Each structure stands twice: as C-alpha cells, then as structure tokens.
Image (cartoon, rainbow, N blue to C red):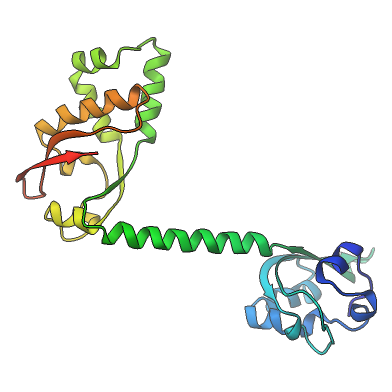
Length: 238
C-alpha cells in the first residue's frame, strides 16, 4: 500500500493522505487490470523493472478503497524500484501526471481529421494531396546559387521541370481522382506525377513551379493530364 504522497498528487487526485495512505494498493487497482498494464506493474515489484504507461484512471475502479470525490483522469504513470545495498526491493516510486487535457485535445484533433478524411473522399471534385518538400528544398538551393528569375531559369532548363515533377510525392487522392484517371484504387496513383503527366502537362507544371518559387500560394491554370491508359484529359488546376 501507499506509505507517502506529495502535495502535487493530493491536489491532482483531489484526495487527502487519510484517504490514500495505507489504503490504496496499486496491485488491486482495477483500472490497471482493465487497461492491460498490470503485468508491467507487477514486474516492478517482482523483477525490479521500471515501467511507464498511460491509462484512463477512474476512482470507482481504484480497488477496495473509498475514493469518493476523487478526480477521474487520464494519467501518464512512471514506476521505478528503490533498491537497498543488497539490490533488494525497498520501495516503489509511482509518479502520476494528469494528461487529461492533452488526451481530450488529441481526441478532438482525431475527430477533425476523421471528418476531413470523410469530406476529402466524398467531395465530387478530384483532389490531390502532394508533398512538395523536396521541391521547396530545391528552390532554396537555387536561391543560394544566386538564381532569382525562376521563369528564365526554367525556360532555359526544361529538363529541370521534369526533374521537379519527380521530386513531388503524391501522398493521397480522393475517389473522384481515382475515377478521373481510370484507376482501380488510389494506390495506383500514389508516388510521383509521372503516371498521369503527358508532355503538355510539363508546360502547365512549369508555370506552377514558377508561381511557387515566387512565393505565390494560389494559382489557377488550364492544362492537360492523362489517364492510366494514356488518354489525354483537359483540366482546370487550382
């Protein structure tokens, strides 16, 4: 059972020493059994192995104790053994950190992401999610070399336009995009742009590169792509 607590724990859990010391036994806490971490907890006592885990802690499941009024919360728990000079277990230190607000924030973000994914897939307009990390790094390299006129640079180095198209990573597409390009699944389109680019596509892509290199965040262009079967498609890119 618990032999000592600090003020931070008492204030966090909203209990007094009288309610905790000599009464709460971590090995009888049903929260830890329910969450599946009890074997880790027991190893601290039997094998002297430290452990760390996160659980939803509910006062009514704390074991054979009266924790009426205690705060239910998500906690990040660290447990480590204290050994004597003969490496025998003397005590176990258990540290609780209230991460309830963090957990709720994570759940909110997860909910928003799920709604975004649902909208992303259901919207009837083809949408691509692209990673331009390597392209922006390339722009930085060109600037470090003194290049400022990107239109002139790409006009004189058309092979660099194709090279940039290979640097872009397609990380996601929606169902409308899959249908547009005659693909069986979105996995058929992931990777780089080469699968759906025609020679005319590079002209439009060059204008996109110039705009991005010049710091523009929005662009609208008419261009051409192709289906996976090679059929040309006229598109309006935004």
